[in-house]
Image (tube, rainbow over the protein chains, first blue to last red):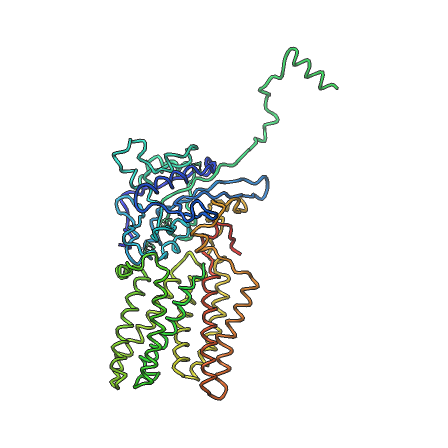
Length: 245
Length: 291
Ligand code: SF4
Ligand code: SF4
Ligand code: SF4
């Protein structure tokens, strides 16, 4: 059914820390790997070993430059995947009912055996989170690794999305954003987690933690007492002698 | 948005066909005998060709029947229903009308369904908040206006056509003007897309991949400014000015035929621009700016 549920019991999602992401693309590779071998049609590639390879990915890392009015520009690595929106426009436009949002945990999924590959849901998503599989002709999107997070065959520490499990920087967090006491909700509250394109009124579940300001030097710094005591003995003499030259 | 030929032909041909069908339904075009047969055949052929071409861009056309299930929320599903209803009602109407038994109320219902189909197609585009240029009341007005104009033109209602052509030219110019301002007005920028807008100017430093992908091919399309002006001028001349001029000359079948061809070519150019000019919000993640 492409009617959206009024509310969902839980809101599983990701919290992505733009302050710590180093743009290594490990999560992209982990995602591609897991979703090529598990749930649904394998994530396809066109001309994978040829001159112009192009494939479906559920997670991509962009890098942006932010130039403040004053001071140095900052580079921000920006991972982007489906935000499992509460008011998901991609679901309501789907003519076949292939796209749906689960009542129990809020995950937005595509039933690949119902999908006619019309592409309308990808048009309706403002974030570019849906890509047509070039081989299967069905719509692919992040499943929040629905086949890992509930999978009792996996050791407990692996029951998180592949991207979260693999991130070497700890920039990706997974949890229930409907529960105000969950780790992810507290992280969002503490760090001022934000929505992407709030004006599109999709009510994303995933949140982004803004980068912290870089290299802030205290105005009183020059007046502080020195912590290093300078070289002593022979090195100290050499240093002072060179200084006088 | 990528101007896919299948979608351009679909919306142009089905618009022409459904417009003519609506006129036949209202009894504003000849429905009886051989002339009736020719008119109905043309209208059904255009609509059918349009609908068929729309299935060409599906990844799994064999599952198309599933598209009838979600009419509660999906305009695409509604379009499928209304199109089938329009063709069925008009088919029955044609079968009765050609031998001379024209059931007027059935024709009115058919005409309403034909325009309903055009309206649903337009709503598929107009509903998309992600494409501010399309998310405007002018989108359904344009689609309906083009279909009605085509109906009048194809059924030989000369004076109606001339008036409609003038009104539509004005509506088209208005739609372009509103469309040009729509992205900026929507408030969606690279700043809101990344949430970093409050910190300074945000620009794409590195795309996720060096090559293109489905999203960039499908939704990030650029039309050069010069190109755009040329094409818009062409639309105004071919779709409106030339047909109106030809129809104002003393009537001849040849001039009318040229007017039809010119209008159709103009309409194809208009549909190409409709897709090619439309900026999708996802372009902001790929270095397009809200210009
Ligand atoms: S991010 Fe896009 S695909 Fe995911 S739920 Fe939101 S609108 Fe749908
Ligand atoms: S591509 Fe598939 S999932 Fe997306 S709208 Fe079409 S049928 Fe639904
Ligand atoms: S794995 Fe972690 S650090 Fe690397 S790109 Fe992904 S989110 Fe960023």
